[in-house]
Length: 127
Image (cartoon, rainbow, N blue to C red; front, side, top):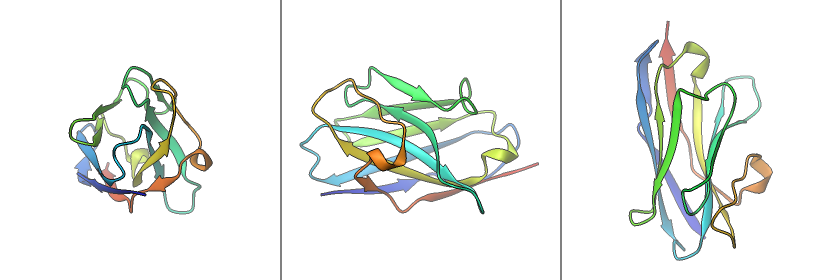
């Protein structure tokens, strides 16, 4: 079992930046692919970004490419999402997710691939 706790959400103006963190605890001795998803009111949960266990491979949704950066520090069991040039349409609850993996290079982009989820952190971007 892995427990995930997100932090770093908040209210920011259009064009601003936020950095989300996701701290993992529990069975952190395994390899985990990590991802960020978001869900806006009345919408389905959507993929934002993912990173392989090694950190060498990443994948981004088209809507955030060039603005968001996912990274991880395995020594700290933490994954980050740096969000720049925020737009009102980025407003959502952001969730961190983890999936056990054998490889160090795989990335996972759909919610059903993930085994563990955090409780989410709210991001609101004002126009």
